Image 1 (cartoon, rainbow, N blue to C red):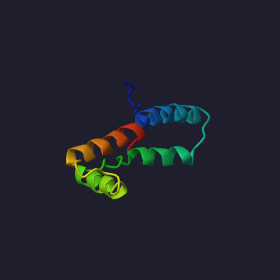
Image 2 (image 1 turned 90 degrees about the vertical axis):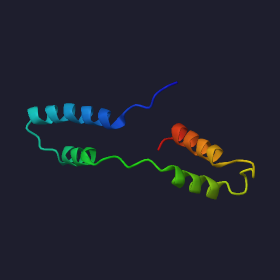
Image 3 (image 1 turned 135 degrees about the horizontal axis):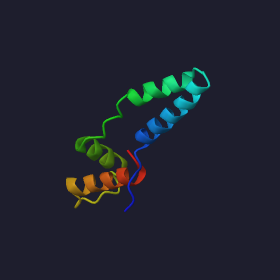
Length: 86
């Protein structure tokens, strides 16, 4: 199974290398400052189980079997998030 790369860490690493190059050339870059501010912002919280249940049941209300329970709905939602991102 492949793991999702840590994009925030990768961006921070690339930004640090870019900032070194700009500093050596005595260039002040606003984009780097914006990127630093964006990286300092915490990532959004993942959805709660209740939020996922509500979304899955709303989206698939006509297709979900009456026999499916909350555990099945959550598994479906978590599988979707794992596959296509948060």
